[in-house]
Image 1 (cartoon, rainbow, N blue to C red):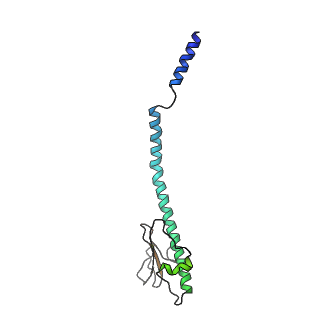
Image 2: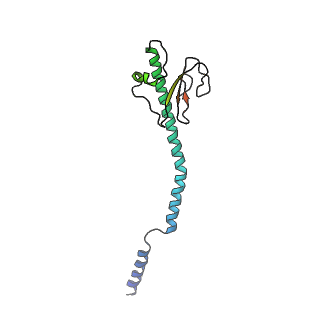
Image 3: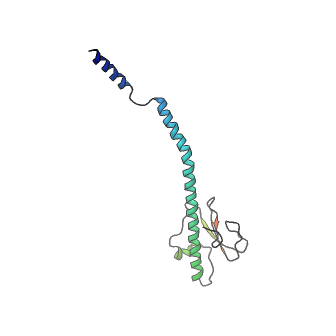
Length: 142
């Protein structure tokens, strides 16, 4: 009989010990918070970097359309109006950061993204989004 009562006592103790203590839960939350503090800035930097690279690819696409336009146009000149490139672009590229693209034809005073002066008649394609910069085909590397 004594053995049965001691077994009941052990079972009662085990029933009371279900779940986690408050300290254990706080430690888990703390570890998760530390992981988030490390991972979130890395994630945001990766997203920003991918947006800049997509924007650069869009500027290269515009440069390719400009080259095709120059070849097929009557005066063999570039255009600063993106709507003139519709036949060569297909869909107009959209900056992932909601920037707008602009095309300038250099007069010899414009500079490329790498600081090199763009010769007169060369192209400089810019994006208004912060940090996306500009692209001069044949001067700036992708």
